[in-house]
Length: 60
Image 1: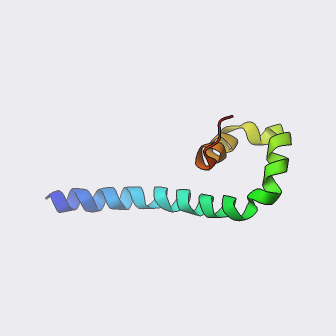
Image 2: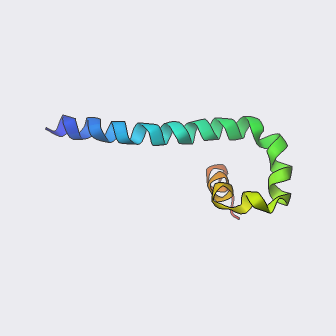
C-alpha cells in the first residue's frame, strides 16, 4: 500500500520538477541577453519575474 502512495507522489511531483529544471536551463542560456532587458522592463516584474528571481536566488 505504501508503494502506491510513493508512486502517486512521484507522478505528481515529476512534472513540477521537470518544469523547474527546464526553466533553469532556459534561464541559464537566455539570461545574458534577458538580464539587461529584465531590469529595465517592468512587465517582467509580475509573477513570472518573481519566479525567475526566486530561481536565480535574487531579491526583488
